[in-house]
Length: 485
Ligand code: HEM
Image: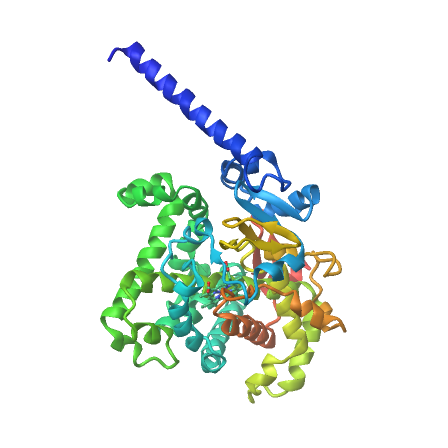
């Protein structure tokens, strides 16, 4: 074929592709069952609108939602086949025990943990795994984990105190992550990964996980890239895409650990605490699925738990009066540091509980809309009929920051949880989601940050600064803090 013929062929192909995409966009905007719902036209036309915002402008859908709802009202078409609802009442209509709606593969298959409790799309698929996890995260099991939590938090406080004595600052972003990693790995595998001993708390798993976060966004939109990258050598990727290398490193370190305990389960036998993987290995779960579950539990156990802990500590250290109030509350039930109070007493401290609830409200861990697919029968949400197959969701942040529910919703006001209408507010605290796919680790995830904050506040009184150039919270040593204040 001559050059001219080639050019003609390529040009025709381009014209055809553009015509096809334009026709698809027109069909999506004007002839789709969701055409009657308001929203930005480019969002209705194709999923690239979302992609451009997330990948190029660095704004995920949850960042855009307040603006979109202010402009288009309580229901917005945020994708060709996706609706987002703003009203807290819609949250209950979507996420409740009667609805057994499937998860949306676009989101849930982008974490690389498809064969795990979190990644299974249907309630039926998830059920057998949920039954195993229900026992390892039962109230009784969590009470068994408390001595481990206490021991690790004491170690964390010792390290903060040591840093303070040496005149070193402490990294409050990675510190709680390292603490959470050490606790969850002891509970999962019977041994600590020693993250708190790493310089500045930056253990390789935490750094890898941190580096890998942007890769998840790209893999969500281009899942086949992930398979292609499997064939490229790490040295090559290291030069071009650090984030993906982080993800690879994280996955390979975790896989090594899973293989180790799978090949030699006796490694789990001498652990001082109940070990989650003992229960998982007692069943015949294939390796790939065991790995996926490990990734789910580890990321839930690190990221979400440490976010809550960090957020609560950050606000307490920022507000000295509040800190004194919680310390007084603690003093009443724990007057003698050598006599440890009943764990129930620690868990029921009203002000501490309010501080953690407020941290969960403002920083709920999973801010994206947990999208579900409307079943074949269709459904009614907020009095509107939603056609079968539509992807629907409500971001937790829209509920938690609703001005109709929370006074000054963007400010940290733990005392709101102690006011007469607190029961009503509790109903709208949905950080762990609701319904059949709600958080499986909820009992552990409610206890661990609360106890961490209590133990840290019982032993330390540090000064906090925010590094303005990186927005990273840092604990200043008291010697420096007294000069700077
Ligand atoms: C403060 C800490 C935590 C928060 C705020 C949190 C929040 C959530 C939310 C909102 C979901 C539902 C997500 C969705 O539908 O897309 C979820 C699911 C889940 N969480 Fe958590 N989580 C926390 C800690 C944990 C911990 C520590 C574990 C276990 C170690 C855990 C295990 C799970 C599992 C297995 C699921 C999947 C449940 C299912 O799909 O059936 N979470 N979590």
